[in-house]
Image (cartoon, rainbow, N blue to C red; front, side):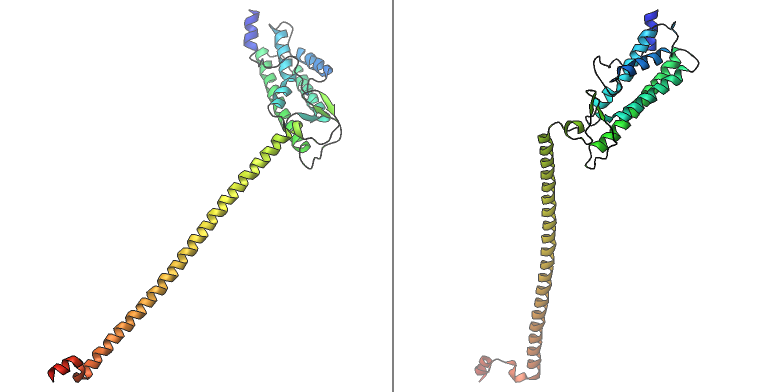
Length: 253
């Protein structure tokens, strides 16, 4: 019966790994404090109590491992901010411990909300700190910084390379060169297209001008020919003697 209660009350993640360190469990005293606060949440007669509390502890203190390893830029955090996160978690568990016991399912739901809020706070805090610490301006608050992967304190104010998600400087440089070449190729293609359109439009305008000039020239020549023909007709009409040609006159004579 006790095992059935454990299965019903513990739909929690089992992905927390033994030996994995994170910002929240770098301090052994903090782990003991969380264990003590969790123990106050459930009466001793609840079936599967010890297993539930132990798994809740692992899920909470190893959450930083899941968050930070999802993105290599979420690795470092100011010790002062780590302390604030720990205080916040202790206050939440202390508040739950002062509430009236309403059953295992109720406390499990409340612990799930604390877990989700903790994950959200961790992501937001890590992301905002890393964006500043890895930026070119690099305006970081005073105090040591904690490497959440190794639990080592770092006195450096600004970070780059592996702490900012860059595995290999050579790879980063190659990515920048590739990006530059892509942008250069796009610029060349765009410039070629603009020049082609320019030449097409210019050629079209020139051809229109040539056709217009040729049309005017032909119209002018046609008018001249028509004018010459009209003059010849007028001369024949005004001078009947000249209506025959010289050869025709010789034949008559």
